[in-house]
Image (cartoon, rainbow, N blue to C red; front, side, top):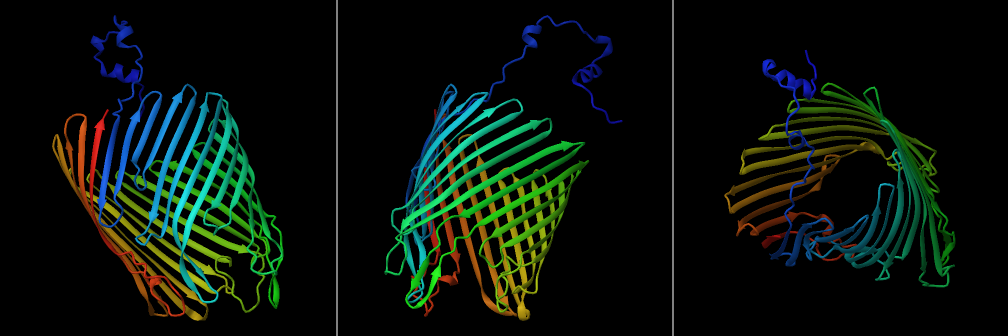
Length: 570
């Protein structure tokens, strides 16, 4: 018999009946009084760091983790690349927040950008009302690769110097089973290098929600516009306007409902997005050639779906349907309708878990507006898709592994240049804990895509990757020494009609050793050394006689990095 017992019943059954005493305890006020829950004490700390690198710029930063009843400070390598500093102060129902974030993403040739964002926010929250206002300013600087066609195809380095200022605010009312709110958003984009056109965007939104027992309903609507009013360079007198008054009006609706009924969990959603381009249409002349007319393009998207799940013992069954309809004005195919139906079974038995997912999809649409000698674009053409996903996992305290296999097949209409495509993806990862001080982790995967185009042209693409890591720690009361090593490799190979088109691969070695030393109960320090070796083949950077290209932008490097960290517990 499998029955559930209350705590009182368990206490009575476990007691000796002859010695049972049901009298009121003498010290009931102290022994049985409800005691206030006390959160574990937080250890406030601050720290500084420096990293000296032979490959990248030297780094200096500060970290902090300070919390109190009225304020908090959270910093991670503030002042260094990809560091941040966040501070908050709370006075009654009002919270003030200030943050500085640095996002650094440049390669060895300084291609990329660094973004520095400063933001300030104020929040007000009570049981009935919550409101916020937030302002931010972001500077993005760096370089990117650009190109021109006339008079000769040429690649060159272009400057990135952008400033984006954002302001948004909102207020929300809360009830026992309902909530409703409104918000406003404004964004201003400026290109300080006068390469990209300046633009702005505004949006107003309203949202609400209802709760009825196990049913949750949420809805939102937003309306806005994006404006680009920039002067046009007058290379000649054939340009009919001096300013391009570009404007796109936006409209978005969202609704989602979830409920649970006799053990079945139901979900449904609806999303609608409309982009109405109300920019002007003009004739642009180019010498003796016929005029070229810019045509504003409108788009709309409608997505809706429903899914259900039911758990029976160790097995969970789920199924669902989703529809995705799109409309594009003045395009090769103005309307497409995509539908997808899936079914999934998850099973768990102790440390073993597995799942099987079957998916069937189809895409149709309106007639094509192209000539007979032009093939349909494959991402717009009619397509039938079948996909099967298999997953298997096993996990214990000292070891574990996961395996996932995906088989997919796409069948396109005869009018598409791409006829069919078959995909196989296999991914594996696992770990083994030799001891508390030694852990081995590994991963590997491969993906193969075989495609058939018109005239029986076959294309085969293969992508592979694998890697492993080893971590070791030797710990005593005051000193801990750690080391880790990670190796990763990825590569791809392409062939057309069995003719090899060349392959691409990259690999990376990353090794680190560090020592932590606790000077006393408040002061601790860490010294670390990191070795990194990166290599990749990038044929896109090879010179081509017909194109004026920039220098070889390979990213092969070896880096030695030494870091020092010092932490104080306050």
